Length: 193
Image 1: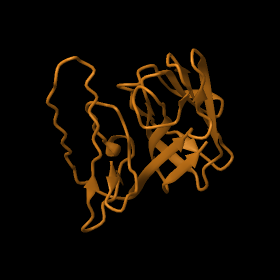
Image 2: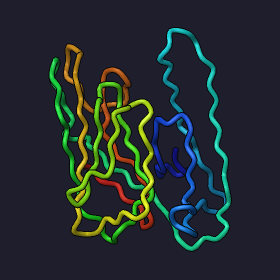
Image 3: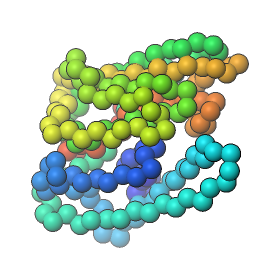
Image 4: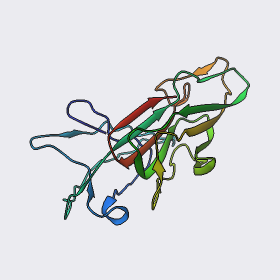
């Protein structure tokens, strides 16, 4: 999902999702400029043997008060992802601290069908864990600060049952992704780990 000029906002495999920033951070809101548009890039994965009909919708709720702007965080493990045939590999990635500091509100993972475990750690403590690539948890935080001296580490456990290497790509069954998506108080942050 992204705004009209191509700025990415969020990516998830969740079948349903509600963002309620105000519950965790009173006054927090994602700004949509006057005349701006949001474009949805929707992918449906039919894991059954029968055709299915799906729908996508988005509902907006105006912020009752807007005192805090939130923005996307995207941490991508693209350069280090390569798993040989018949192997299971843990792909580890790291991004250095956020300057200025950011307060993470929510986090989710994005991976494909060969991923069996996705974890994210900050300050030596695991903050996120998902073993469901198709419907990963969206975790909300009461307060999770990432500062200039902090490092976020994330890992994906990928099992390759194919006859060729699995590398970074946008195909569900023949390539993988290992991406952390978050929404935070503070400026947008994209990092290739």
